[in-house]
Length: 327
Image (tube, rainbow, N blue to C red; front, side, top):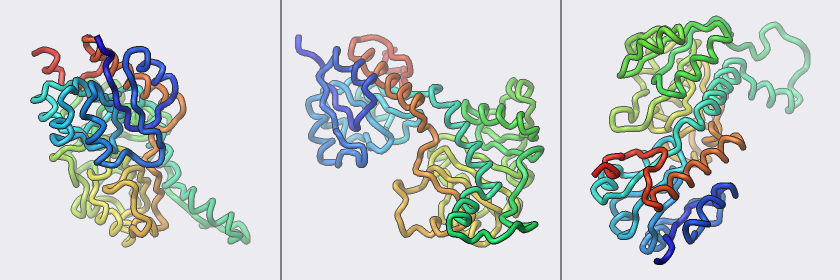
């Protein structure tokens, strides 16, 4: 019996490849800077049993129609909006993801952005390096306090809950909005549920932690920014299209909010001429919230384990569409 064949759409940490290679023949897109072009992906999938993908790879009906032997798509991400799940389920293709392993690291980074944006850290660094610092001034680069401020969480999943735990160390009052109220977490984390508009109006810091779906696309737009305090700091480490980027740019330019920390964008990579990038009161990062070395290794090895277990006819650790396995 021939060995399964696998296509991996980006160079992975070696421990992940060490899991896959004893089980399957691996073809690897061996570049770190760009994903495989569409025509390469469509060509490579024609003879594979498994795909290990990143969120930059669009796995839709065209890909799955071309990949007639495909049994599993293992996504190296907690999100899976790059994959057409209903089509995968129709094709009896198992889709998996890598939840939980990145929770604490992303929560660290969300809090990092909150602190840095509130205290104008990047501005201060640039000001000092430019030789602009002449003397101590009472209001030089004055920012907003984090301690004892009100944090508003949009979404209370794993990462939102982890951010709430960190807020306790800063004696923050925490409120949240989520379509599914979590009274158990309210008690355990000492946080309050509020309707969506109330969170936007009352919070000093707003951090977004929702998956991308048709319901959450442009969840935050002009109307929502208009509700926020002029001293508010806005942070997004979820998915770029959850926020109307033009509306965010306008809010920052008009100083309708104080500052923002943004790790994800509507278009990635964000174009060099995007007007968001010229705003002084925003910190922009290239989608690196989960980018610690230990976490990225754990994500890669989990993605490899998901892939291999399906190819071996077993139930993977993290199926997104388990009905395929149960059918």
